[in-house]
Image 1: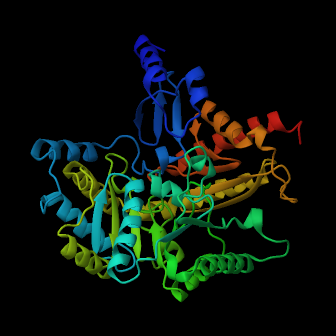
Image 2: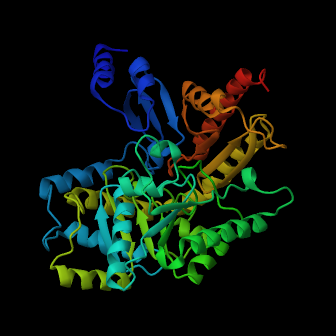
Amino acid sequence: MNADAMHSIKADIAHHVHPQSNLRQHAEKGPTMITHGKGVFFYDSEGREIIDGFSGLGCVSLGYHNERLADAAMGQMNTLPFAPTFYNRSHPRVAELGERLIGLAPGGMNRVMFQCSGSEANDTAIKLLWYTNTANGNPNRRKIIGRVRGYHGNTVATVSLSGQPHMHRKFGLPLPEFKHTELPNYYRFHIDGESEIEFSNRMAARFEDMVLSEGPETVAAFFAEPAISGGGALMPPEGYWDAMQAVLRKYDIKFVADEVVCGFGRTGNLWGSQTWGLKPDMVSCAKALSAAFFPISALMFKDEMYADMMKNSDEVGVFGHGYTYAGHPVGAAVALEALDIYDEIDLVGHVRKVSETFLARCRALSDHPLVAEVRGVGLFCGFELMKDATKREPFDPSWKVGELVQNFAHDRGLYLRAIGDRMSFMPPLIIKEDEIEIAADRFKAALDDAWAVVRGRV
């Protein structure tokens, strides 16, 4: 490691506070310093080549080097580096992107608002639900329901909506208007002998019980990812979405589809909503919208909601919401170029093609003594790690088996994400079949390494 790299690491330890990190561990050991990347690989300050099995944070869809996206950013910076979208001002790139997204959106969306992150998009959705309910005669509809282990962001509102206990503790969260229905993890929580459809119907019945207990007239919306990412790459069980959407329709509860991870090809369709037959009232997206080359997100919704927004704007005199960098011209230019590239290379078709190899190699790991279940779709797969798969007996949490696998994978040149004792494997969407083989081999080796540590305890 050269002197410049050492200085960067020391400076990072001294001054940089890292999100979603163990602060004590960071202070003692320092960061993995990533220096550059190309394709589906990135490289650290120690010279290691690491294949990205988690797409950065589920966002690096086109890999780590793309001249067209870089040129789009530079071209826009040289033309118009910033323009506000406040006070009835706009610019050509954001107008074009809005039209383009509405043409692609699922569920008959007509309007779009731009932000900088998925958190901001979902936070905006919450505010708009409350805002429009004051206009349509339902001001008491303020409760928002998410799911245990669901994830929708880290603003005060969206982290309250998220069902992530470690993001609530010590912050005095969640806020009281946010409720959480059960995690639909069939493997862990099904009753012996219960089919997936029976399990899904039970989940929907428990959800309906919650709605009735809270009072349907007080519930504004249900937020959900088509497939859960932050809770461990968890695919919905058979019949789940049909049963859940029936409850939403019965009580006229809005459905917000969080497509921040699933959107733009991850599941083998442009939207996860298409993969599982969702009919949302609002859709949020981010991450792959710009292939992670620029912070930008979007919230799409229907004309009926916009009409209620107009009512309040007429009364107040202004729509009192927005972000300085919303609809940033550079972000819009990069997003437009990313969408062009997706079309030109048929990214969704590529995902469908290589997913056969990807999912086959993932399912082959189900025979490993650490692995109890493997489920995936497209280039999105989750692994349940269990002490005893048949009895569904988990490992002692203090063993941190998922973290062991994650760390051994990194040592072998594969970046994976452990969420407790679930592993999430979701590589960049441009990954090739030979690169999938490399990643899967390294994953298998990391599981073997972890098994060598824990097998004496089992």
